[in-house]
Length: 319
Image (cartoon, rainbow, N blue to C red; front, side, top):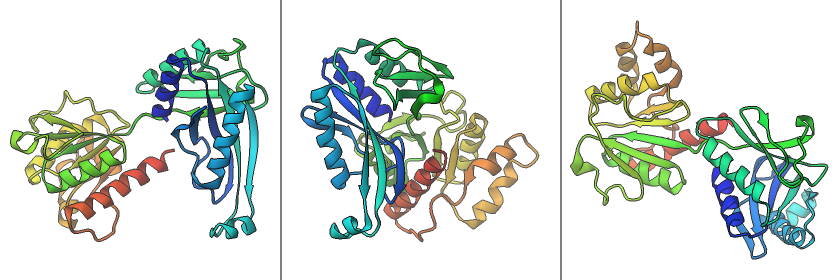
């Protein structure tokens, strides 16, 4: 969602009008969740998705009509089981999609989008609109609601639909071996922000880790790393001692998720290093060992799939 907000800001910087099409109600087998949003310009789909298929195609067509009229609206989309069967699908669905018109001249909306994207790292941020009227967009930062961009009216919270702007997913991978290489590549493909940390420069080459952040760093003292409590950590170093060093450095930062490559023996022994310390409870709540979904993966690439799957499951469980 943060990417959608930035792209909206960029369109307004070019004075390009657009429509934000957002799912506000879902029932049935629709592929995307409430809050899923896409941006549509006069040229068609610009960014995001509300699930693809026939419904998204119809929504894009309607959004372009909204661009012509300049009037936001709310549209129900229903696919009966018989309609679904004609398309080779099994289940029907019922969605409502709100089409928020944002004129290219809305300077206040541009300021809101910028503030939302820049605030999400350290604040609770939502963008807001009114399903009953066309006031433009508003935002809420740490509980404070700002006026609508179009007319400056202060919205009443109970009348608003709000979409939470979640922090971007950041993953720190400790270790530069084969599993780290495969995992970093897959997580980058999934558009996550990935940083690989190792103390061996020969392992952190652009050739081994293209398109992700590389950080040459001692594993003995990790206090300066900006790991936050919404970040994900994967530990796959070259040995037991290095794993424990990393855990001692990152557990005090209370990351959201910690996955460790290992086996049942590691799972039994590693907690012993933290028993009787303040870090034991963090270890017990946050550590996944062995890391990854139980898909019996053996190769680095398949292990990477299991790790990515568990990270996505963890993230979606907190939505």
